[in-house]
View (cartoon, rainbow, N blue to C red):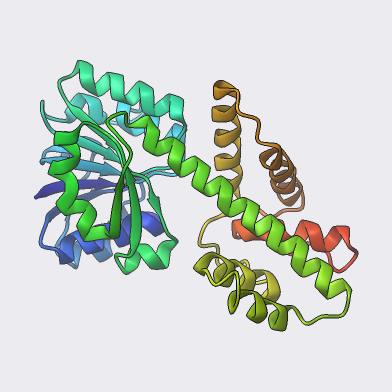
Length: 303
């Protein structure tokens, strides 16, 4: 397929590389153009403008937040060339793999429909190493024909694709709920590990016990190891992005009248981390809140 990919951060670069490996014709765009060079060396074409990445069958966006995606989709007034909506051919598909608000997904859906284009939300679950290894899990929602047309792309970047109906924003709600769950695991795991450490139990020994019995899951192994080692750099998923997702899930919960008490607690964990200079740390660094509350240690990254 002829596919454009916009956004070459930790996730987008790995996705683009795997699309190339699968034999797709890939055009890449990033505001910082130097990030495209490793992919050009692998056979990608570098686009100088957003519009140049929208000339194929599908364009995939993998951007940090609502603001970044809005500027790319609707056109940034300060940039040359048009946005995705103004550049994509009728009948072509825009796949958004960004973690965005439900409200923005609905706005983009309407904009594409009015232009005779198709829109699919396909956020992914997995850290950068999973993106590089084509081991992402893809949560997708959109019109059945559009989703089906994009399946070869999803198969190129992930190990399994899950469908959530024909309303694109449903996939964004699933993604936000999933990131909320991950943050609650980080919080509860950090509280438990702080408790046993305060009682003199070795955290690594405790983690081995957990992950060898009832909690034998990648998420406990990954984040438990980071908490025990206090290894929050380099960030696979930066704390400000986790904070953003926490705000978005709270906004969705307010709209749907679905209280999320844990999300409010975690909001304050993120806010505290930001106040202590943790912007460059992995979002797992919110675990330091429990340790500091218990008098075990101060924050890494403290100003």
